[in-house]
Length: 213
Image (cartoon, rainbow, N blue to C red; front, side):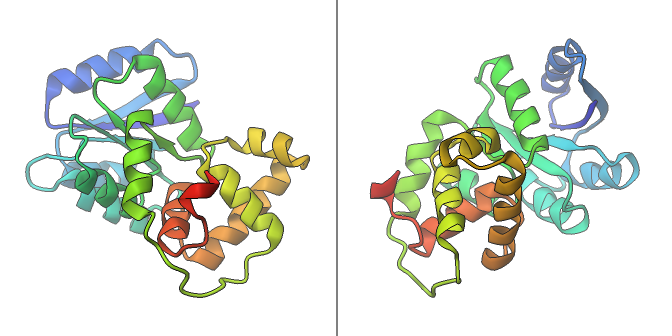
């Protein structure tokens, strides 16, 4: 069972999202918050697996809330769910540690899939936002080698192409567990906590080039 916390300042949005998720046998909405400050408190007491986070909210917005949640509870995955497709909002939330970013007009199944993917430690970005993000970071230049092995870079490249751990394992003819090991090593070397941060960081630093994707 995946425990989910909903964070949005509009009760109607939370109600609709709860209704959608409650129809899934393996998803449980354990709480709701109307702003980031409440989300922080509930994360400390409820310990959800995944937080579905709005961006613009009173008292504390989703970006700062995500940053503080990931600092205090790095094991909790955060998915941004917003009406805003502005790259500044998207990049800020991802750089704060979110595992992904979806738009509120996304199909319900897309959110359900995203929650499962985030729980597995995978990144989820709305397809229409992916190209925008790649353009934003394509000017990165190498800062240092980071001592990545050839296999680690292969795994990182496949992750940047949007493949899941299982798909990467199949494409590289290795086990899913080995993919997880390589990702853990990558997170440590790049000083990040998620696949999304690793991919964005690698693009910025020139480890991965846009032409390779």
